[in-house]
Length: 322
Length: 117
Image 1 (tube, rainbow over the protein chains, first blue to last red):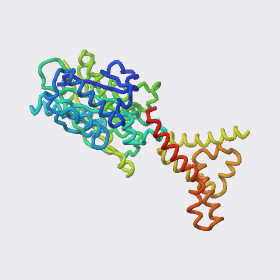
Image 2: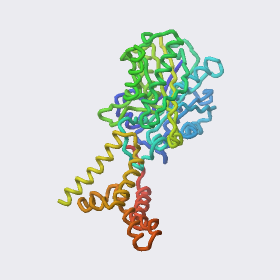
Image 3: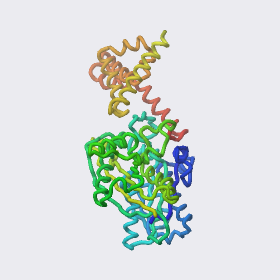
Image 4: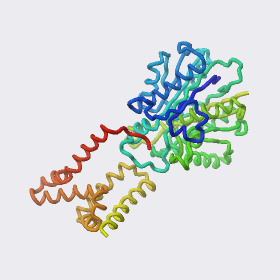
């Protein structure tokens, strides 16, 4: 059961179409820190500690934190957790980390190994550009297929089902690593679309459900390019994608006024859009059954320099409320 | 007239760069290297000088202008001191620009912090 959540986003996200749904907007990209990595850690630390406060726990009542981000050795997750004094497991799934951390937290809770787990993730535009592409100081031109990494962090409190009417994770479909030979790190949407296609297809086969079962199927951060490709992939199979299939990368920013290229990306894209927007709509009963499918492009600066193609993954969470 | 030609030629060089970024998969770093190399090769055949005669700073300020300086410096130095000049000439001629870039880059880094656009 996802008992509660807390989302923190940066200035640009706070000016986007979903601005009113986020719990906290931090205008300063540095969040009062001296580097992007520390700033991202601060965002994540705030998301976690505010969630603990909000749910009325003391930190030692939290059994475990599962968290991940985009940086080398999960730096910002480790920075965020070093002041918290709570057992910690780091996860890497690139932009699919949201599903990975929430899904695994539910496995822990369902198995009875823990009672209160915080599943969290973060990303930061500036640290991600530095990590994967070029440092901002270089002032590089961005090609139109490039996506804009979301600055933000989200945390989710996972507890055993206590009968209250909160969104519950009913299925967690773990994706396979795929690789279709795409090498362009500026076109991650195209890389990741086949992974989303594969995981959605497998999830529906496994659960013997069809598209009609869900009120809405949400993809993570395919953006405009990847989303279009996903439609084409389903069309080849003779399935016309229902328009209810939304993408967090498209919802986060206003493409026309915010100059964000092909849409949003980053761990925080799906995590903040789900936590800020869809979670609240589920509590209100607007949506009762959601399949959320965050996708991840698993490249690093070194693999790009090696000229290697980009492995991709997608995980699916089926989330329902009564 | 000088101003107009500088504007037109300089602008055209930038348009080529923009087209390469939008229409090809070349990264900006590769476009940068391509432009410098192209400037050097063109000057190797004496062609870039002709462009500079027409456009002045419109041709020297964009990146191929740096390649032009490297090639021109190397060629001149070979004429003066022989074969070794091919290695020393280019860098000597562009030393001012390189040192200035390092110096001002350092100063600016001290004063300002990077921000997203």
